[in-house]
Structures are given as C-alpha cells and as structure tokens.
Length: 266
Image (cartoon, rainbow, N blue to C red; front, side, top):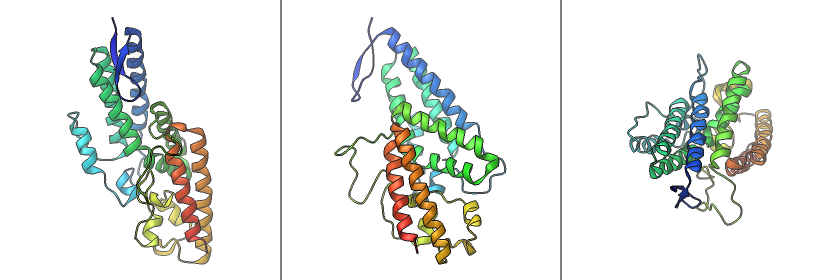
C-alpha cells in the first residue's frame, strides 16, 4: 500500500511504507540534534542574552513566536535559544509520531513549521551569538561552537535559507534576509545590533577599551572596529561556502559587515 508525504513544492506525493519509516527516522534523529542545543546554558552568564530581541535589538519576535507555538498547543516560556530549540525538538518528535500514526499531513506540517522556525527565527542570530560567545569566552568555546555547528548542520539538513541564485528568493528594495539594510539610529546603537554584521558582546566592548560603551569614540577605536568587521565579513563568507543550507544568511551578513567596516573606518 502506498502512503503520502511531502514532495517538492509542498504537494502530497505517494510514499511507500519504507519511505515513511525513513522519514520518521530522519525526524527522530533531529530530536537529538535540537535537544543537544537546548541542554546548554553558559553558567553565570551576564552578557548579551541568547534571544533575538537582545541580539538584533531592533526587532522583538515575541508575538510571532507565540502564534507559532500556540498553533501546536505549546506555550513558550520565553524567546531564548533553549526555549526555541526545545520547541524545535518537539516539532521533530511530532513529525516522527505522525509518520508512525500514518498522518502525513500532520507530519508535513511539523516539518514545514520546524524548517520555518529554524530559518526565520533562529539561525540568523543564534549562530552569530554562539560564535561570538566562543570567541570572547574561552571557557565556553567548546560548548558554544559545538552548538553553533549543530545549528548549521540542522540548516543543511532542512535547507532552511539556501542561496537560491539570481532572480530567486527576492527581498523588498532596501532589505536582505535580515531586514532593513539601513536603520536611522545612532552609530553606537547600530554597532551593538547584529544588523551591523556582527555580534558585539559586552566582553568585546571591554576588550576594545570603549569608554562608557562608546565603540567609535576615537580614530584608533574606529580602526580596530573596521578590522573586526572586515575579519567577520570573511568569516561569514567562509560559512556560506561550507553550509549551503543557510548560505544566503551568511552572504547577506558578510555584506552588512563589510558595509559597517567602511562606515566606521577612520
């Protein structure tokens, strides 16, 4: 007997029992990946919170996330990385159970919602945040970068935000995969937002010797910042080359970092 499951383009195509079992096993594997990110919080953390609103600063996804969770009868305790990855694990478990119950429409919905959660509400800020944590806090490097790499692996599995090429995945004028390219705010506020092209933690501010948190107060500070953003732009380009499932994010973030480097350069 043939069953039905997700096919390219979002249609429902016939699936054999073996194919359905394979889809269930793939989703079950993802449960462990999502959970491995959920289970770690930096002990005694007093820097930028692991949440999109804190990392981006100009956007709070709380309402959007609440709607997504409520549609599955789930209540998010907050919008932090552990809560969102726990939700992702729950969606993967829901897909697994739906395939086993022969409910392909529920399985397909769980897959689609999980892919959207990863690509729209997680990868773009959580990967840069985890990368910055590992670089700024040596005691957290192994744990932070392991979870960064797990999210990138999930992005490759689900092809959450691939770089589709010219003419595809278009964004409105003046925007990219992150949102508006220019925001009318003071430079000091812009530099602390991921939209600048980098996550600058409090530890980075201290290491740059920024008085009163003013990152671009002198020519020497501007030179240091320009170098930081130039190096970061190259790092994002390297990620784009090695992680096709989220490549569009990293190409856009590299362009933002390069633009900020040009702005802050003395």
